[in-house]
Length: 433
Image (cartoon, rainbow, N blue to C red; front, side):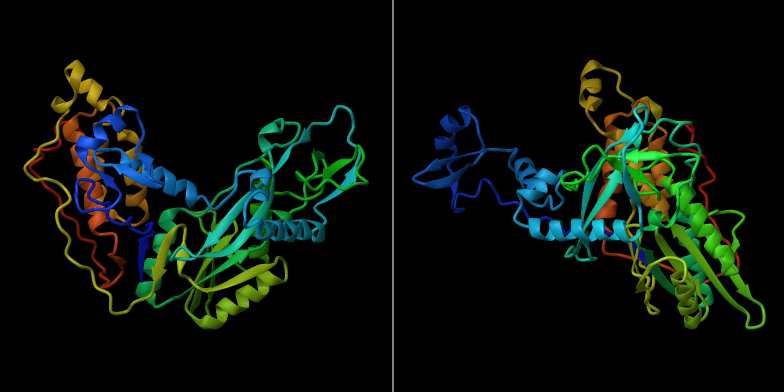
């Protein structure tokens, strides 16, 4: 079993802005006057000409490309002005049909003192592992931030499976030869009826208010996405379903359920992340039995074998082996707090450096798929309060290491029953820890 993080396709190499043979570039001596007037390019004889010495070209190009690739409109008005509006409109109609079929609300006039919750459309272009759009999805969500605590909701806590639980399932599947499958639950939050003691009213979906609505609003009968208590109510419903199917709840992860079949010595484990369920079992027919059992209570989509999990691509490769990697830290550099900025100039250099954000991103990589960088990340984290240029260079070296290993896989290969660990016992680089 192997897992790796999904990375966006590598950007094509930027052109050499100083190549005199490249068409569309203006020679340096002719570009000076134009550059003084501002701008990265200008029009010459009906052709767009790029300034040769414009060093910010790559950043501008990245911004322009990000705008072009922004596939998901932020508002309904924006969606209506796009060429792919028919696809988004179809997605909206499908969402409204689902809500109507689930008897999510009924129209009635709200009392004068009622807190009427706003709603909005959220658009999502679902993609496959290579970035191709597979499905346009529109979701009506309540703006839960306008709810009043104690009046509109009480409990809001809901557990989701820990990343360590997902990793443990993959490791177990490798060691015990388990089959990994995945199911998606359609309209998860719509499967739970709201409590009668909390009466919630919501405005009509933007752009889709019935002509006969008059002063009526929507009295919510079931939880929808965005409500403060929606996730909690859905988890309670799903837990009761698993209990009815003979599953037990894990004592260490409330979003993990398991079932033992003693007579056949079979095992089935399920981890839940909101509406995504990852299933590990020793027999394929147990997966089909579980899917059939869930279908009696809720509507599920069979995603077959596990290929995608929380942004991590997973595949089964029995012949995969781990590969030796290059060093991700400079062994000649010793990181200490003495390398923190001391002068005004050094403070100015580090003022806008996103050190803490970079450390946060690296910590996620450690938890998800890169335990090999755990020590290095722990070290650079120690200097987050007052990092210096040397510490920032160490951060960048870790990112360079990750860039060079993005095509490698975290492989679960040889299994050992004895846990082995290694440590540098001289403590020479741990004085600031």
